[in-house]
Length: 376
Image 1 (cartoon, rainbow, N blue to C red):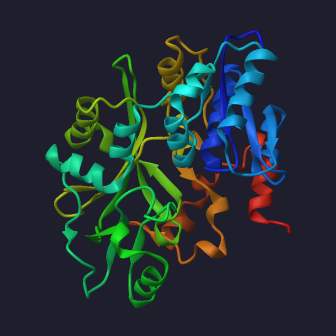
Image 2: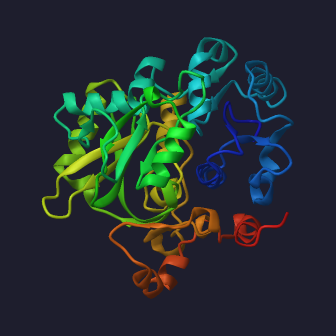
């Protein structure tokens, strides 16, 4: 591992499904990957990748000094010349962009666009405005919270006036409205009509060298309140002209890197509206990898300007037909949201779905068992 000039540093403990996908890809290629685990209970310690842990953080709070120290260790002791910081979470990305100059002076690579463009795409309101400027539809914006249900409250920016990270609220009825009014400042949010139809993710990497890779998935089962996707299957949306318009817009705006664009597609007209975008690693990344998308190879080229070691051509479990995270089926995530799907079909297709389970694989079986039967 130490003989290679380039390496990846990934902070674990958050967005764990994407972190595991990166670990698997790096192991398959023989790429040097080091992990900064988040305490002794980090789920990564229940996987085969525990051996890649460089440091176990005693405190979850991230400091620039700590990050610089880890990079320095990789350069001095492991003799890597440059270290890419994996874009594994929204907080980390914004932190790295804020301190980009110091990190890159220390030998790190931040594989992201500039801070202003990143915020325009990641912040929901500004990305909606960008889409509208390019003729791409978004849900109807409401001047104030309506009397009727459902509707959606979305944060104007990543953080509110008090500096706290904000998340969208699905206002399905009086209980959700009361919780929103109790927990949030309305001035930090804007309001949209609730979009129905097929739930789609457009998944892509736009390379600095002009190469574009894309795939799409149709989401079938999701945790409550717009939580994590539990089950998805392949979609042909990325072959459509509509998908091409999103990719062309991102290119025109100067974007490069990883991105997931969430959309809703009307069942009758096929019209799509944009829900949000995540210009970082995302939870169901393993599905894209299992279906041949070389996302991390593209990220490697962006960071180091060199071709990564090739990935072995190994058939994925279940043929990559589904994305399935059985660990997401927990009581706290109920009631689950079905998207053009139902429990009867889930049972009928269960054998094929279970074959694609994200963590029911040799490298993560202990984590899989822990998620299904957690212990105190």
